[in-house]
Length: 128
Image 1: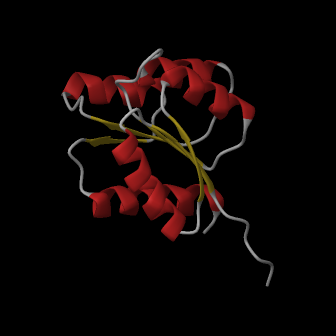
Image 2: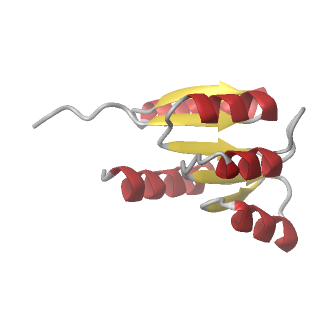
């Protein structure tokens, strides 16, 4: 049976502790993880490289997560996106989903729930 190459995940999060926590758990799942600490860097990476999943904060320096998502979708980036944000109002959730997010998790978040959502998207989109 062929060895499956690691899933590639981009974490766009300005809180370095949260980014590192998520990265550590994704590595435990066998994922290769890149981190961008602002919206401009996240958008550039999402366009330049192929990822299996993007985890995207909303409140980011330089470009908001909503704007990153909007621009990425306009430019043909179809990578699944989980919004991970403190903006938990219904309007924010609806905006994120309407812009093309696949899921929306609010901070503070349960790491177990986030990992379950990540696994579900990866299973659905990469056949494993």
